[in-house]
Length: 536
Image (cartoon, rainbow, N blue to C red; front, side, top):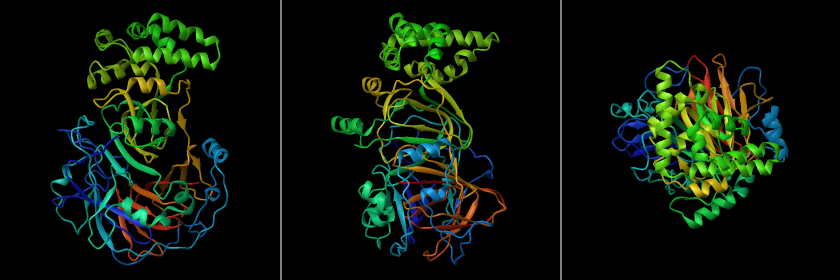
């Protein structure tokens, strides 16, 4: 998914021993959020007002003066470094992660990045006109406005964003504007200061930040899509680099910030067969032969079931456009008449079908709801999307983390380039009902939940700190990380920082490897943080 800007933004980054707060500003000086943004046409798409936050516009203040001591929350032992074992993860996700990666102990190395002065940076933009509107009304998370040092905010206060990027991907690499700094982008700075990544991360990922961190606010459904594994990504990149810009895989995880609805993975076959019976228009597009094959596969092995499921899905996705439009119109008419008569059509997801058809009239992707699991995540719940898993985000706000890649294979619910043959060939046709990814609770930090997927590229951490805690310590890990403030207001400090850094909702810190950060809560109310890093 590409990010574009409503106005050319200027992001201000402050480096101090591996810590980087971000404040974005438009070219005319008005502040926006500290990440790359997605332009979506005439509407002002973006974030809804998140629960538990004050209404109005958030501020990201410029760095302040003075220092604060790092003590950590009451009752916690002093510590400024944490390994994967010290996180003390428990539960299914943690156990799965332990089985997939070595848990060798790590010690704080004690080195510090070279001191850097304050300098501004500009987030890069991508060509315009490549995204349809993602929000229908501007009641989303507003752009962060600057603090007292940048008073011109009137125009920016109306800007709302669909997608915010945090990372060094070439399509969203932060541009450094301070002439005193030789590096022009964040990616270049990391390339010349690779120790900030951590020794193992630097070696495994060849001196590059391995993850991309995002926040999404979805009002109009995003495409039916999947992401290739590394082998296929390399092949697609060679064949069509204009559509597949990276030779890297793109496993990703979405953690809900609000109630979040999405499609993820194939349903159990018995559920699909039920829809074939209840939705004749769906059955018509699949065809009797493929439907019969799927029904007969119920008594066979997993391979025959996957083959039958692939046949059904491919028949649907490769249907002639004229026939798709005819059958979809018939289904929409039938559901609309039943709803008007007061009948409940939720057994065939009538309301969702009508919504998707309204957003994408005549699109084959509307029928995908009968193949894929429909999930509604509560805040804090997550879905992990490994390579070749079909999915679509339908509505809601989420934090998203992925391998540093922008490769997506699409086949519906989008005006973008679609590649139906590749999608149908690459997908994992393994039916499964349980698609929630559960976090593990840290034994070291009572406020820390860890989403540790079975890939080496990234780990997501959620820190939910009660307002009764005066100061909270973000423990060091042997990886560069990005910290996002979703709720609350803090002042960040580190033993090697020259000045403390005020942050609030929308604030971001880039934290170098083995660097601990103390957050002093600056206002009543709970604190909600998300952190992306790479734990090897």
